[in-house]
Image 1 (cartoon, rainbow, N blue to C red):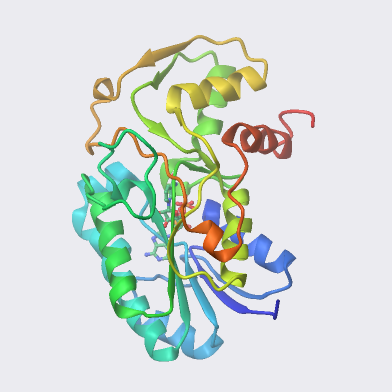
Image 2: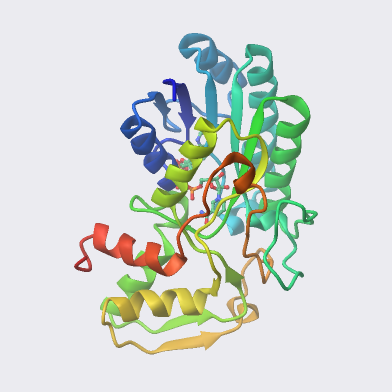
Length: 292
Ligand SMILES: NC(=O)c1ccc[n+]([C@@H]2O[C@H](COP(=O)([O-])OP(=O)(O)OC[C@H]3O[C@@H](n4cnc5c(N)ncnc54)[C@H](OP(=O)(O)O)[C@@H]3O)[C@@H](O)[C@H]2O)c1
């Protein structure tokens, strides 16, 4: 595989930071830009970054990811998740740069009763999902050379600043403080460790994958099952109260069932990711919370 020059936006996020580490480990030439170094809503700055660094691949990990914040500030969500992505797509197309856009399971309405494949039709039900779907459409229609990777339920070592960390840390933190834990049983996802996703993203880019591809840790579970699993791996005997999502009274509606599966990874000779339970175990070991 020849060395690529890759520009990564949102490089200090939980996925962005793992992706930068993985690209460097694979000896690619990386330009890692955090929000303070490149605000993707500043079209002039994005153009200047492409001119200055001349990447062969542009991976956009920057996004407004807090689902309730998107619902409460629609304009900001449109600017970051859709308009900025349109500008990036136009600029990448002009400069003949391949664009890799990260998207989400929340483009689906959650009404299906088996995992969503790349052939399923999106029908977002909240502002976050809608704006991410617009982002996808802009990439597809304005930049021929593209890869859209949809993923779900991310947790990573650095956590997401705008979400106040990640779900696993939230659950463990609450249990250690003896705080009551109420987790939803009626929302099912494919929890995905960002380190696993980062390595699969690199494989896909190296394999010159294109179009839409779903990448998640294999399997599915409710947030209740996911949190309970983390606690039982840690040996924390804490009661987790099962609740339904309506009890949470949050600003944004959430799709109830959004596990993903890929029917396209095979086209590029790429294996699916390992099971979510194995990835969670590994995450806890890497965090130093469990012995291998
Ligand atoms: N988290 C999930 O469960 C999940 C699920 C499915 C798909 N995804 C997608 O995966 C991608 C990565 O998400 P993540 O979980 O790694 O979230 P994250 O940790 O919050 O990372 C997003 C990054 O984008 C940055 N950012 C926000 N607005 C920006 C702007 N205007 N210009 C430049 N950077 C900006 C954030 O900076 P600040 O922290 O300073 O705001 C943050 O570093 C996103 O595309 C997201 O939609 C996430």
